[in-house]
Image (cartoon, rainbow, N blue to C red; front, side, top):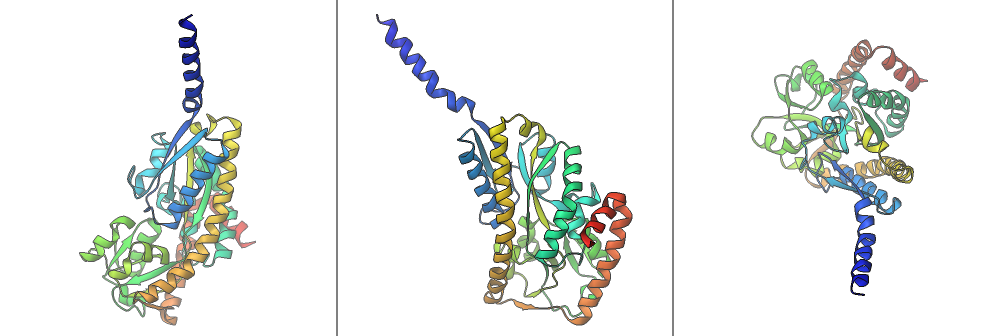
Length: 323
C-alpha cells in the first residue's frame, strides 16, 4: 500500500518534467548593445518564437559581443558553435563579393532602392549561405551611411592622410580611394578609438552615432547616404532541420514579422536620430556639390570593381535590381 503513493509521485514528477526536457534552447549572439533597435528587434523575434512554439523553442539573445565578438559570430553559426546569430553582411564580403552588394557606394541610397536591391539579391544570398551550412532567417537594414568627421570636409582633399575607420572591404577601399589610412575598428571600440585619435573620420549610420554617443567625439555629420547596409540573422542549418515542423513554422513566421518590422523601424529611427544629432550639437548638413560629385565618381568605380569580382551571380543581381 505504501508503494502506490510513491509510484504516483514519481509519475507526476516525470510528467511535470517532460515539457522542460522537450524544450530546445538556442543561443543567438549579436555584436550590438542591448539598447540598439537592431538588438531589440532580435529580442522581440526571440520572444515571438517562444510564444508561437508554445515554449518548445527558447532563444537566448547575447548582445554587445558578450558571447562572440561581432566579427566572430558568422563563423560561430557556420561551425555550429552557436545555433543562430546576427552579423552585418558586408563584414563577410572578403569571403564572397555577394555579401557586400548592399555596401556598394551610391548604388542604393534610399529605403525604396535598398529594399529593391535586397529583394534582387536574396536568392543568391540564400544559396550562398546554404552552401556554408546556414539558413537566412531575415535581414534588417541600418539607416543610410553618413560621413562623420572631427573636422569640416568640403572635398575629398580634406580626407587625404587622415585616419578613416574601416569595418569591411568596401570601407577599406573607400579610404584608399580618398587617400586616407584605413583603420579596422569594430563599432563597440569606436568611441575609444576616437578619444585616442586612432580614428578621425568614418562612415556609419545616424543610429550608430546616437547609440554609441559618437557625437561626443566628432563635430560634423554629412548626409551623403552612401548605402544602407543590412544585418543578417542566420541559423545553423542542422539546428533548424532538427526542429519539429511546428517549431520551424514558428521561427519562419516570427522571422517574416521581424524583417518587416526592421525595415519600418529603421526608417522611423533614422528621422529621430538625425534630429538627435542636431540636438546634441553636431553640425548636420548635406555634402558640398564638389564632395558629392567626387563620392559619386568613387561609387561608379567601385560598382565596376565589384562586378568584376562578383562574376555571373553578381551581374544577375545588378541586372535584376536595375530592371
